[in-house]
Image 1 (cartoon, rainbow, N blue to C red):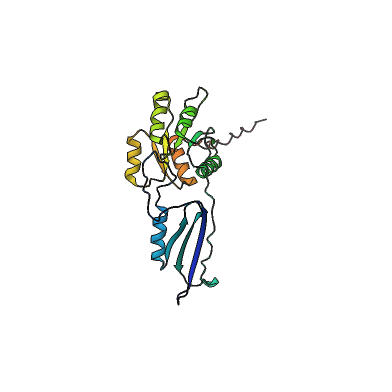
Image 2: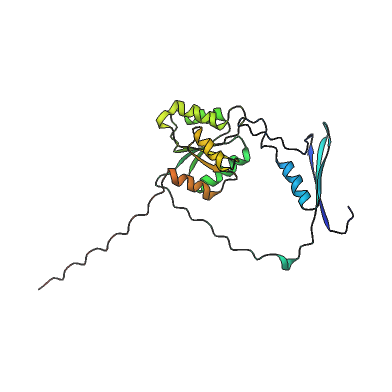
Length: 237
């Protein structure tokens, strides 16, 4: 590519894949594919805003090459901002180890959620689908304190899985928290009107998970300071 403005070009090759650069917009709870299909559409808009373009070369059965260009000036070391010190958040421990059921059909989301919840002091079981979540939550030995439920899953979505769990457990059902990429305020209200108790958006962060856990499972309160022992009265001879 020849131009007066410096440009960067990127190429990514995928095997046996053919996808148009347009959104799939699969926003149904029971989705057949991961995500909503907006990634390529957003990437195209970002490329154009940065003075470049995006495209795909695809041969059926052979693979696809996705490419994009952007205009950029060369970075200089003196332009780099000073790195701000990172402070680790301090979370108050819970009185008892929370037993958590994490439901998500995506393996990466499972690993991220498992790691974050474990660091918060939780004992976590993972379910990869709605039917598996129902089996774990309603097992005779199940004693979960809270369930984090993905909404968009194939075969059975999170709303249907929650309804099935509540039908079996009744009043003994633990709080069920929607954990999903739906990020609008009306989405949170819609999920709670459909039987879920709370909402946390993706990508999840430790602070957001702790806030939800704190709402439903109070952390241990620090013991009050003990008053000093009284000084014995002096003995008179």
